[in-house]
Length: 172
Image (cartoon, rainbow, N blue to C red; front, side, top):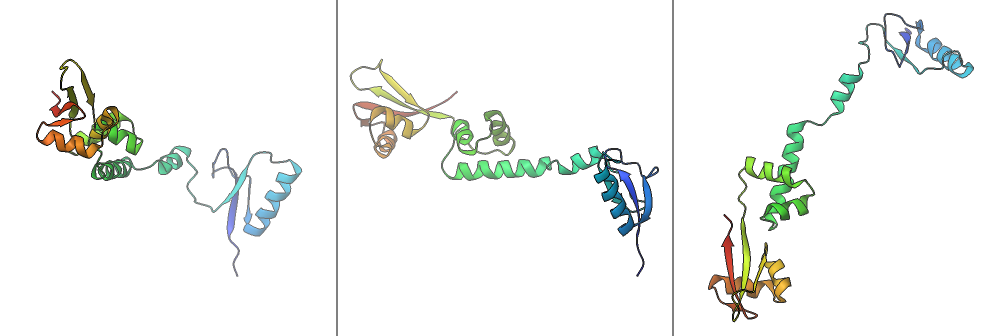
């Protein structure tokens, strides 16, 4: 059985050209334990094989960084799932996914996701100056105290719901 040659190097400054000790693995392990416990080597050390590339923090940190394209794919997948679940505005997608509205807006436009840039409007039957608006039918329903289904049904024919004319207005 052949014993492997190893180098003991300073882990803070990984320079294999100037090792602290050279020898077989079991002996070097015992030496590092002894010198570390006795306080002779107060810095962290590690065992490496001769010819190993020195440790580079920037390379290590770069390897830990997530792939930006993979991260973007995950984000657009979340946004598409939220869109499929009925969130058709930037605000609703932002609330559902937890991403910033700037990021959601960028991804929605980059991947051409169709949005509804409309809002719901309710105009009082006997007072045209009294207007209630909401970005979603549910929000308008909460403001009027009516179920969203009846508001949506009234909007198809510009009919009345709770004394209000209901309509959908495209945003410019």
